[in-house]
Amino acid sequence: QVQLVESGGGLVQAGGSLRLSCAASGRTFSSYRMAWYRQAPGKEREFVAAIAWSGGSRGYADSVKGRFTISSDNAKNTVYLQMNNLKPEDTGVYYCKGTFGANVYWGQGTQVTVSS
Image (cartoon, rainbow, N blue to C red; front, side):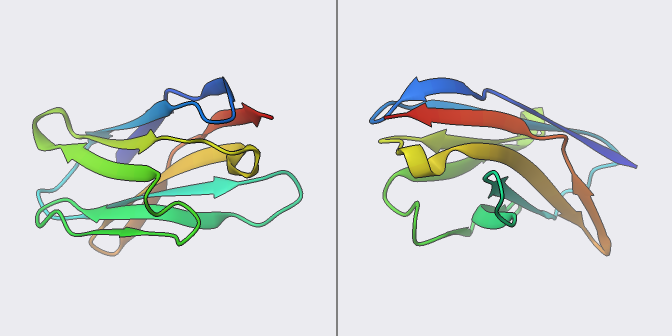
């Protein structure tokens, strides 16, 4: 079993920055994929960014390219999402997703609110 715990959300003005963290614990592996998703009120959950833990390859949704950066610290089993130049449309609950072999785990989410 793997546990994912997000932190770092909050209220920020448009143009500001936040850094989200997702700490993984339990039975983790050296090769897996981590991703961030978000869900705005009344909308479906959508992909934001992903990173392959071993290789470091990364991918981003078009809406966040150039503003968000995903990174990882293998020693701390933690993945980060640095969010710059935040916009009101970035508001939502941000979830961490971990794919470990055939198993998928989700964190409980952290709220990000961007005021205009």
